[in-house]
Length: 432
Image (cartoon, rainbow, N blue to C red; front, side):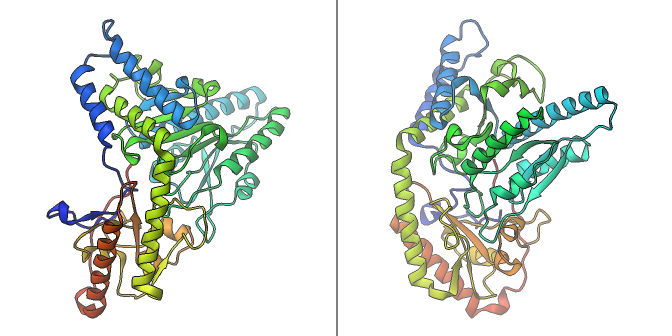
């Protein structure tokens, strides 16, 4: 993900990249500061009851925010770790089960089958690539449609006897498009009833909710998911994550590294109490203030759309918010029609704006995001795209600065085309 340079006085700049990360909420900062001062003892020590109590409180806060139970929450370092851990645990369990079945039947061993969308985060796709290379599973990608959404019917249609897992993100970090997770979860529940009657393994369902959590309501029961991923820095918390695992499936969650018995023997390593406390506080704030935050995101998002339309008219395009209502209220993927307005160049010359392009190739060359192309954009439109993502406290004044800055950049590019024919700026994807 290529970001506009943040050098210079940040007070003169506006931050429009809340999908990349968010600042710590003041209440979260206070909670973490208190933990640094008072909860520094090792949670495993017999005399560290207050530390263990604080970790349990955080676990309850996260569970309550997503409609789960305390025991169904396991803390980890990040959303990336959470995704990797869930995928590896489910695939390894299914692989071992299929190997036992093949030995008992004298038939050839089959491999677990995993279904994902073609717009997933690298933390899902690259982990499954690794498991597939090791001969542990077969992966099938379901293509998104022209509006960035997958068809749940396509997922069900591609399920087969060996399918062990469906993993589809709740909302995409680049496009903001929300997938029909609740409908897909209901369909899988019905399908599983039939599979169980026939003695087949039920298909488990995982969603990466990292980008949606804190922007829209996330309830594990309403979504009908077995596993769910969240990461604190997307909702004004610290950079740590949590796994939701349905309680009857906790036995599948095997440690991916080894050591002590922390996190109820699921995840060895002395607990990061400070970040866990911060994550719990951030989740509590989401639970208490989500509707208030959502209303402001909608309000400021509407103002952004109005100002962009008034300033640029038919010289720019909203990539997804005009195609579907199922888009995060804070996320606007846009591109300018003029071929000289490549996304990275627009941001390069937007002196006061901190925002991102659709994505940047890991080769270090500016090129079109595969996620945007898989979501229905042409290669040309994807190359010209930028992502604007606002936060709960974004103001109209900041939007005015953003739009004026983009207008200045576009004017510079269209009036000085010969100065901007090349460029190679490497970047990174949105981290989980």
